[in-house]
Amino acid sequence: MTLEIVSVNVGQPQIVEYQGKELVTGIYKSPVSSSLYVSKTQLDGDGQADLTVHGGVDKALCVYPEEHYAYWEEVLGHKLEAGAFGENLTVRGFLETDVCIGDIYAIDEVIVQVSQPRQPCFKVGKRLEWAKTPLHMQETGYTGFYFRVLQEGFLSVNSEVKLVAKDADGVTLAYANQIKYHDKMSKDGAQRLVQTEALSESWKKSFTKRLMELES
Image (cartoon, rainbow, N blue to C red; front, top):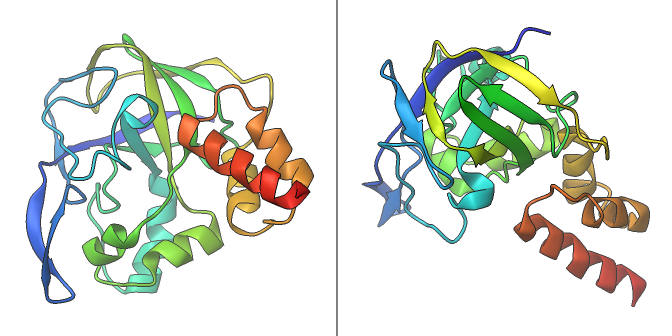
């Protein structure tokens, strides 16, 4: 399968109105054509409003498959621009059913590793003006995911993307989503995710807590 970057998207936090109140969010991102530096924590020119749940080492780059756009355009009834889901990289060839937590890719000089599925929140619902979006993302499994950065460097929409290594644990993003949102009583599933070495710390903590509750 060909791996491609379709769009590189950045944006700074801005204030919008949400349910009659002011909301600061970095969900609004736009495509850029320039080459940007990506550090261990974020892409140059990009910003997150709530650093407790966005950005950081395990969530340096938010990624969303272009293949899902046609589905959402049909559901929402209008065309969507790249970056509509607040992702830094709109990509092709990275479906949740194929990509595993821990997979390593080279994007030109940048080396990245899949850390976890994206956990959709209400802000993407605000961005698309459809409150049911986060729940629908969970139900369809069209969540997207995050990269951690193993080697910093520059990337652009024209960067060459190569698979460096598939993770030995073989836990797909789709499997992680299934256990997270649907098979919540699965001890085996929770155990498998806890033991997935490359899984983000926040998701490991979440599944460790679930496992303790299921075993109590």
